[in-house]
Image (cartoon, rainbow, N blue to C red):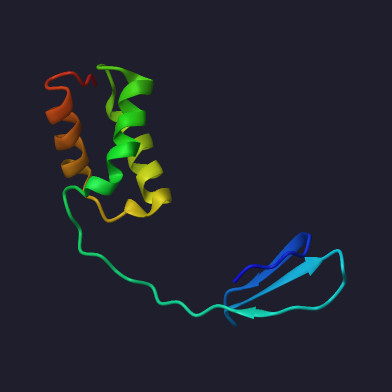
Length: 103
């Protein structure tokens, strides 16, 4: 659904599942959100997370620490991959760069 109004603010009501944009034209609008949270079983890896791994390895090179891994895991959570197991992500890093992480 495309809307051409110039939005200046949003109000999101999580309890009522609605969004109310405040637009320059001052016309009140209300959109109802229709969504369901899909839970995923924990997994060691998903190929959709590969771009995040690529960026991580470009940024940290072959040497990364366990703290760096924690940052990567938080980024993956923020990107919707919070169901990936830490050991699985670390194994994928080790597979790409065997024996390179430091404590």
